[in-house]
Length: 275
Image (cartoon, rainbow, N blue to C red):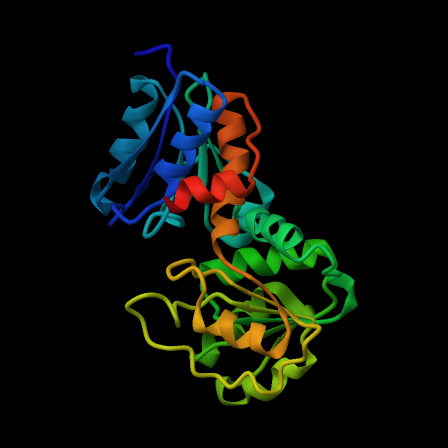
């Protein structure tokens, strides 16, 4: 056991994670004696890892794929938003040994939007989301909390989008993938939560011809930082918000809980993580 607080991010694979760079920068910036590492954890080792780390001085962890849903099985306390989303990305180890599970992805998404598009008004009109996975669930919860009146979902597999409507109710409208290019004309906010456009993935091929210049457009992909999706939106005159800020902001609540300092997300933070 050590007096120096330790935290980490777990996943499988994990070498791509930018979280160690982010939290390491904040630890240096605020002159905090602590550490943050990345641990590759196989499915069968998940429970053992969660039980052993607190005894080694770990005060918490971030969780990425494929463990975001599975960690809920081992949590002693789960926040309402993590329950609603059905996944956790932030765990805090209490002094009494209990595990608190939270999901800060939606918080990170909204904070990034507020920073990158300060004039965005959630109540001004519908939001449209491409994709129906775990990130979409977190974003739906955050948008509903912010007061967005309608959320349009379009996914390549319609059944997954319909499942979101079943879970989240009448505020959700499902649109077939082949009709997505037309439906986005209604959107006050357009969000890509799919892997389309990510480095090494297939291109994003939905037509954005119907996009209005006043629509705010954001992509949760951050590799590359400027996706073709965002480039196309900027060409129309839209405010385009990249996905890196969501990663940076979602890390804030955990860092504050674990190390006692609320970190700032600013241009210096972005530069440090991208370096």
